[in-house]
Structure formats: structure tokens, C-alpha cells
Figure (cartoon, one colour):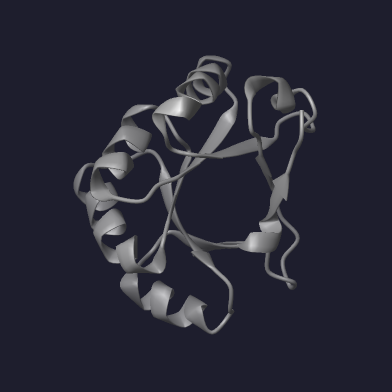
Length: 130
């Protein structure tokens, strides 16, 4: 299981960008984070066409499929969607890893038992302005 943002583990940060210009304010080789929406397709397309690692937050099954098809490296889902998202990733052999956004480390065990690829704490996501 991958764990991002836990106090015991130093790891990669995700940079939440509001637009393409904000990507310039992130460190080299950053993982760019944004929510999946039609309004963010320019960011998504820019990231994938420039081989920038992309994490997409999604809200439903259709968005999970879109995120995978658009080349996201990480698909971030709610705890309620975790089992379904992981099943889709396993059945369709997604390249993307499924991450569940959590607030409490007590949630790790439950998600590990479900077989989810990983978890991400909120402090692993850094808001970037343009």
C-alpha cells in the first residue's frame, strides 16, 4: 500500500493547481493534482501531453473511467467509492493507482483489507496559486 502525507513517511507531495500557469510554480517532476471536471480539461490535457504526473480527484464511476482514459497516474476517490474504484482498476488493468483521501490513520487498516492501492492525507496536497 502506498501512503502519502503520513508523518512517518517522507514522500512526494501533490500540487493542487487552479490553471496551467500555476504548473510553472511547482517544483520540477511534481505531481499535479486537480479535480476532474470539464473546466479542468485544459490542465489535464496539458499535463498528460507534457508527461507531467497527474493526480485526478473524482466523484463517481464515470469520472474514474475518464481519469484512467485521460492518462492520470493517480485517481483519488472517497472512502465510499474505494472498493468500486479498485475493482474497476483491477478489472480493466488501469495504469493509474487508486488513492483514497483520508484524515485519520485508523482508516489505513480498513482500506488495506479492501486492497486499495494507497491512501493520501490532506497535508500531502499543497495548494499552488498562479
